[in-house]
Image (tube, rainbow over all chains, first blue to last red; front, side, top):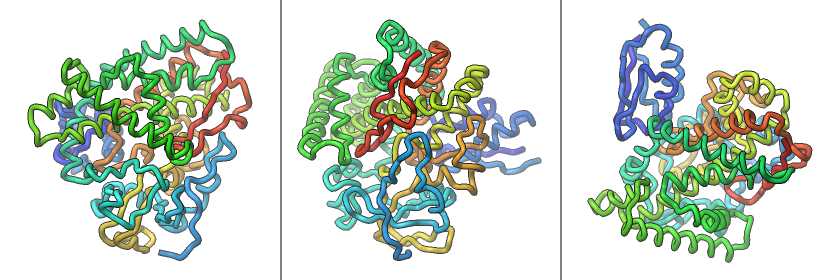
Length: 65
Length: 402
């Protein structure tokens, strides 16, 4: 799985940090920081949940492989 | 758009423990016509897919001041909440101001507040245990908890909390109190906030308002004096009354369903999903606050088009009961997965305080059910009175025993 995050459009809902804390973090302003663009299998469900819930569609799964 | 006869909105609530009947069947079309308390007509978007997309659509402006847009619908005839002509709630001004505020609501900062919320909940429960039964859960717990949390975060003095609460209740009236009373509260709150800002300017503290004052005073271009006061007001109100109403109403619904309380008490890991499900069923209010104005034609999923110049409501409660998104949407399922409800909106106006509200609801729900294991309603749930005519419509009184 390959994940992308766009801090430019991030509106600081913090949802991704709660749903996949090993993959997403926030900078001091609260904008998304991608910790790991290639999360391990056990984190995929959390990442999918985070991607679906992002209010500004700032997260995406670029590849499932 | 069709020429359907407008239906009254907000929808009626009865019976008190059920999701409103009016939400069944309204998603056959992407939008219906509704009449607001002001008597003005608006187009209400009903389907999840459209509501989700339109929350993030720049063709819908949040600028609903009649001085800017003479033909925009009004929520109520007298209350101009969300319609301040000196505030631009659209980009780029909104993004500039929002960024100053949201940094106080990152997951890290919210988690740092969790023990604070826990202690406040414990103190309120200690006071309940020491006091008489039955008690009103609103007065004893649901209102004090969020008001103490947000006043601490923003830096309101504890002795000002009661004054503040009275002013906010009047301010948030749609039709609840006479117009003169509402105006008095609006002016009172505005004056109170001006005084508070001046006091903090002289004596800054380690709080969000002091932080905003510093931003304002360091760089005139980032935040005007009017914006400073307006957004302080917005944060105080949003941080208090919505969460208070939801803590009370969601607890009442849980207590009405004893079997759900037992399930949660047997497995505390259910608290977060239960909180989300109670948020989805949106038991404390309507979507009047989503009022927007179409600055261009906007096509919807059923092929119809919202015409430029239309006043638009995005129905969170209809999106939240959309069968296409939520299996068995009228069933309360505290284990519901993929619960991506619209209660906090979407797009760049997504509720800035959502993570704070979630944290408070989680802490409050567990604290009540853990420390008062036999907590129960002292009257049948069907008899709980709703407070109508305000921006929130939770229960006005929730008598409980334990």
